[in-house]
Image 1 (cartoon, rainbow, N blue to C red):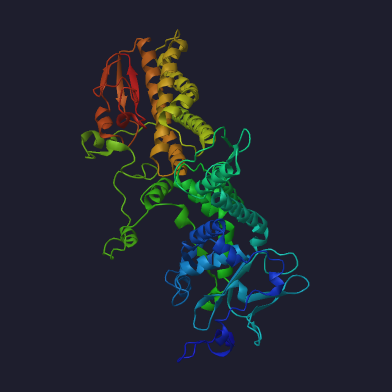
Image 2 (cartoon, rainbow, N blue to C red; image 1 turned 30 degrees about the vertical axis):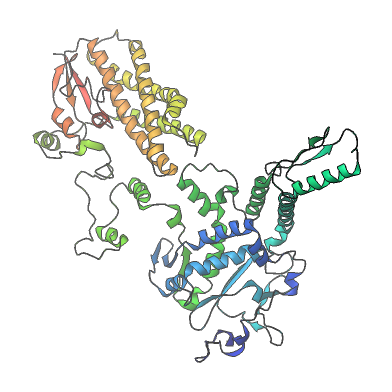
Length: 622
């Protein structure tokens, strides 16, 4: 394959027939027929084309290429630093991976086709769309790909060369149809608009209007004098023109820059060009957008917008992989996740929630920051207060994780007290979680990516949050009250006495849930992460609300049933230290426990003391 041979040592010119390649052979007449404007000329002269095409090319070119080996359907190994990855990172001596992909994407958008050839020296070289052509048979199948030559030289057949090649749709032959055909009329109209506006500003008079004379000049000399004077002034002389007696200046409507719709015309052209390339105009600033966070922007850009183009590039690149690495199952991918997933902090928050615990080795963290390897850093560290199915991080649950000393109270819980399961209470918590998440789904559907303030969310959704919580609060309070009344043989107990208090409880907790929702949306790095975290927060809010309602219902029934004392009971093997110290503490029914609470989950407690609490209270006759 002479077209892939290296350069002459003395001159640096490629051996064989490629020594003429600096000469531009031009675009084939078969492909140029009817082309109103050359793509290169459009690129040079049309700001809208350059804006949209340049934007897309740079966004795609920044994505890194990763090589993988498919071991099985459920396993693949990254081939970091392999020959394939090095080729895509540095295709040739003076061209980086960014430069090559940027140029290929530009070719694809301007000419609807792109091609790069792998030469015998292992360099991946872009071929200008003007310098190669595709020949097809009657059925539209590719039969030959040739590199064009100037007059006097035969085309070179590169059909069997390792090609990274792709093209768009065409009716009768492969090779694509340049979008410049589609845009020619629109851009020609834009050109004419620019020329017209330019003439308006260059040729318009200082004053647009006409002179009105009540009669005629008395003498020819007077008329001539006025004509000369007015002509000097209108040609640029300074000062104020003096009109003859009885003359009047009548202004006529003038075209201002605003009336000419200059800005609107340019924006319309940007919109049309963006639409022709399947790019939402909002992404290139051609139309106001409503992306309230960067995550929504990145997801739209590297998902449905650029996804098809990225897929085409990946398939084209994988055609040359077997030439570079002949192992079975090796393939290339562009790492869209690197652009979509955002910062390391954003990814850490999502992964921590998904896996339920620490997921990165210290050695991996050091490598991420280009720090040298240190012995002893290849084990996964799990903090002592992080349990499987519990907190994903020692920072998740707030200040209750401080002072994790194993005092006598904690040892007693772990060694002697078997936590009692309350299936009915747990079922109420599960129902409450579902109700809160259904409310969150409604809020998400209504506000989506819109930027809203805390006050707006509380005002618009506080009442609906209270309505969502009220049924669960009533069920939990009645559950606890019936248990106490039954134990005390109080057949006269009436649930209705609790309804007024429970409505106020629902109103207060509904506002708290709305505030918590607003703060998650405000503080999260991106909106999708906020909704993920809110589904987790729903479990904490539900547990807190149900525990509060259970405590209230039981205490209210105990007061009306003659119960004398109440005892705090811990139901978790890993409680807060403050709650571990309360375990077994007994006070009169109308008194408060030593932490100031009337029952576990009491609303008077701080969030650190009540959030997610599953403690309970036991009532005694004496």
